[in-house]
Image 1 (cartoon, rainbow, N blue to C red):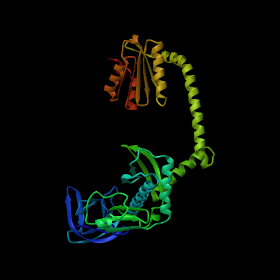
Image 2 (tube, helix red, strand yellow; image 1 turned 180 degrees about the vertical axis):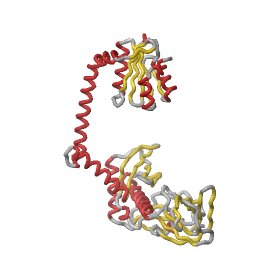
Image 3 (tube, rainbow, N blue to C red; image 1 turned 30 degrees about the vertical axis):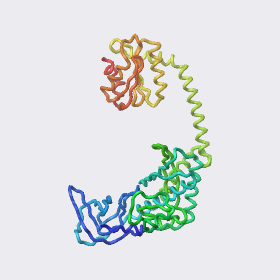
Length: 396
């Protein structure tokens, strides 16, 4: 059985151990040690990385009695040798901040919202907790977030102890374990949270730095909250701050007024867009006549071929309908990776058949009626070929 150093001290970053087994097969190298500080993926927490006698560790897997360390290259050491393991402290510290932060946040939502954590994931870029409620208000999230950060700023001690089943019953656990054991590892945050947990944790809550909830989403009848801690939260703040500063400088406004400045610009843009749409609608008969003058004749049919890429799809569709409503013609309009086909009843061709033919040639998909049809998922360069040679889809 591998001794798990991280169970009693999460701050050990260098250790010595004896090699119990070494396996190398088809380029996969792994080693089992008699003791290790490398944390394996478990309980939603990511594994540690680092080196064993200078060889990089790429993964750590818990197989019950044994912990296997996967190496990036074949090792020079053998069974019985004593090795030196070194943990990547930056990753370990990040995982500790996330895990202790998750315990604090989960208890904060219990106290402020009576929302229990049903699962948690501590990822590379962000972390999540799923709560057994269908929704939370912004005020509820802010209240729980506030309490969580108060616990952090109070710098409360975080302790680890192994207790018997009898002692376990006396603790106000956030979640009762569903498996019976001879002893349980309890991670407690002074006068706040008690949880059974096998992960690595900070010695005091202050080391978490800060907790920030970033996103709320509904998932399978629960609420999933994304959150950041420590240096991850700091990096996110820097990114957001820089973006806000760029926006405020663009509008020559204070950063606190950036949102109002953007909202004002969006309102003006929306108004101008409506005015332009109305103007374009008024001008549509003129545009249609211009397009008709530039139309091609293919297999005895008048065909309008236009590239609307970068423009509004619905406006392009309205243009196609205007063409066939006023002329015995066929319209082929490209909008980025989409294709619109329209055919006047007298044109003797089905718009749906045109889209079907284009899909067979260029790999998109779509459908519609004999008069108006559309398709998507085409490659823009292939649609350019279609614009140059529309007869490819009209010879049906």
